Length: 406
Image (cartoon, rainbow, N blue to C red; front, top):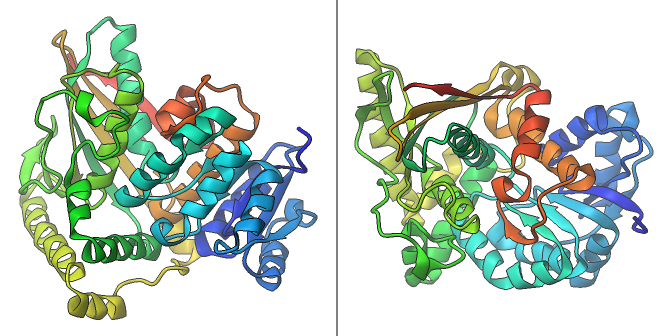
């Protein structure tokens, strides 16, 4: 409590950073001391001037991610730091290291397997020693996946239904594709190009495990399965672009809790596109299109072409378009006791922008003011905040429900 700030938004001059700051200005409890941080004092002043009135007196902190001393001062000034400065593989490691050393709780929006793995290896032990909760992926990637499986597990435990076995998520959404997500994909392909051995890390279904050798044997579902009907609603599905990341986060949550969800749990994610003939057409079209984009990012010449046509980082849809967006994730599970459940996680607002600002803002507040599980180190939303964050997000308008399918 002797630090001058409770919560700092780093990257506040970016598109999602400003959305997060605006959310906090409208929803943070009175008395929470919030500051904005970024590389440019002029841009920070302009952002603050656009925010709701509650933010008018928020302090501004200038810190470049390449300036180690400035990052140390930033981390030491606050109890919690949330950062939207990506791609995290390029800019994130000095920030997360500064927070771990300072004992500062940390939340980000990464969807990058390689960065997440590197951060675990560099700071997990340091953060455990200092008491810092380092929480990656506190936006659309990967809060709905991670907390959705957590509420399924909690329901199965309450019903004495046994452990989770086969768990499948079907994602549906309306919203723009984030330029920041695309930039993160680009950075990961560049890292693989510089060191091809890192491709094995990206392809490992347990890439984020705290103890890879102890992971159970069951083969995990493919990250990019062929189009097929799935789930109790017989929905046509295609590969979900973030499955290769979100699934690793959920499996890490399971392992960090001594595989409490189930040592035989198999977990996969797909995108839902409807149950009729048009759903089938869309499923095959999305599969082909996503395959083309991934192949294009894999080679430098085609990557340059994609750079000219795909959304750029730092920009986003209009306020009206953000308000018109929504997301819904249905997660169905079977248990060792023979029960079947469906969790639904949903919310309004463009998932990559408006809904993500809610998730990151509530994660920062949760870390700053709530009583949380006695854990420190490199954590996940489910293991750092768990049901406390679920309650916050429900209060903010998101849905977390579990239905018994018997």
